[in-house]
Image (tube, rainbow, N blue to C red):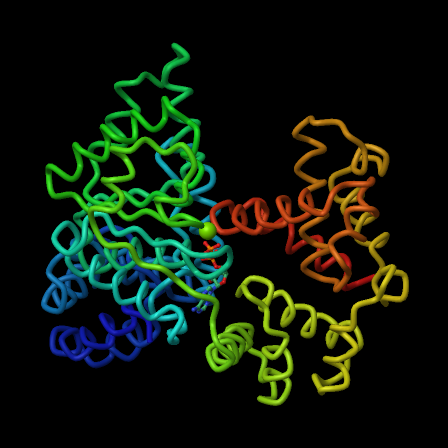
Length: 444
Ligand code: ADP
Ligand code: MG
């Protein structure tokens, strides 16, 4: 159960005491909790008319009841939506339309509750929880490192979401190292965004979460700025959490004093998951998509021994997709067929060319431009999304994808895939576009 559910369930008896029986069954029972943002509890109702009645007459009573459970909640928002999913998409598009230079949007979908814990990741999870519960006075900094796709970004967002719920007054900032660097560089370029503004953003936070600090390697100016930000925050007992794909000592050309700082807190590493954990994760992901998949099938997929969870989930997506395409139940046979590598990609039901054409149609660009070398944003983005879609929906070797995508290297394919996969977490527009293209493909 999510924390806002618990909050709401605990508050309900309290609310019942304060409102009439009719109002309780008519208004309150038609509300369901969906989120906590800052110190605001968000409740949804399906009917517009109820929303306005509740807002007019019951909000204060609800608030005072909720306060008895968590006194930091200071506001109740009533939103009209059919379910949490619809609410999330409304909320995210609202966030996306605000051009905030402050870090990234924290995706409410990544929480401790939906992180499957096993031997390989229990250390980072325990460390992250400790930090989320007592920011600033457990380990500072917490430095999480490990291979790609093992849940590091998930952990950062879980910390952010936990603090948003339990300590809504704290100011949490999540940013990728790339963002930090870009904003710093931008602040030096004499525009509206001055160095002072940059510092205001990064030095006035209670919790700073920076993802992928391995990208600090070789960036001297950024390292200096980072060092000062770091010191200032730690001196004020503010929490810092960093992630990296490698331990500090393996980050090339990292200034010694910065390395010492990184190692001064807790270093927590995450390992690839064992079979049991992989099965548990797959089961969880299938459930999230409201699919019941037989344990034999889950085991079959998990036995591929993927090192990272992203590609494990990719396999599950392929199987679910294949079953929809065929309108057939998810059996072992279907799974085998869906995951069978075809040497040239031609024998797939859905061909790479279909995806390429669909992406071209969607973005209204020519195939030549999609596959070509032009670096304009209007081509690069669809190109990377196209690569992502092929890796996500089909099971062909990366080298084949590179070849089909205009003769690109397999490392380019990996880069594009990971970039889009990360972007989808924070950028609603990209996530929606990808979903729409998938729907178009399914209808073909
Ligand atoms: P990293 O930042 O380490 O590259 P991510 O945090 O982006 O990896 O994880 C990749 C994907 O795998 C995400 O969708 C994440 O939610 C999922 N994931 C990773 N570990 C777990 C886990 N233990 N339980 C559930 N989902 C997980
Ligand atoms: Mg990451």
